[in-house]
Image (tube, one colour):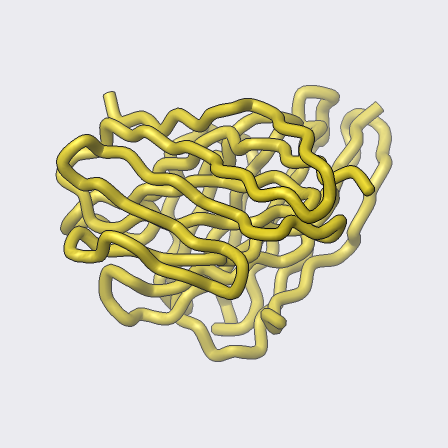
Length: 114
Length: 114
């Protein structure tokens, strides 16, 4: 069964600190992995998209890594800000599929305290 | 900022009412999607469309129906709402550009059925 598991479920950090969120998946065959940020009561916003051949991709203070061999990804947030408080969702797509075949994780709820 | 709009943002209605959730995008995207999301849970695809007059059911069984008469418009209808339909409904769109296509989400409609 294709699955996406994220950890931790929730995380509290102080403003200015770094953090790393984890995503493990069993989706096969693999096409790409996406990280989204979802603010409370809003729709998800894309942070990064990585294909099989990409090991790392950055978007400002967000850096995603991908190890397709171990089927693991991480999202590293540097110098956190209060506005980083949100749910971060890992999404995996399988190869040859329509975009409708996306497998969503349940997200990591990040809270940044001043 | 994505040009995809959902109305209403919040809706509280009584059981048995017919409702339509609106979704419009001004990006000219062929593909549009409806997802359902409960708190702390992953998004589930309930409907998708690859173009005008093309609609398909998603992974999660839903009593709702959709239509795609115009490219920019993808409304979702519930003929008779029930408390089990209480959830957040997210509309999304993407352009047909291969495996790395980006998904744009609306802000969602939070539906509460009493």
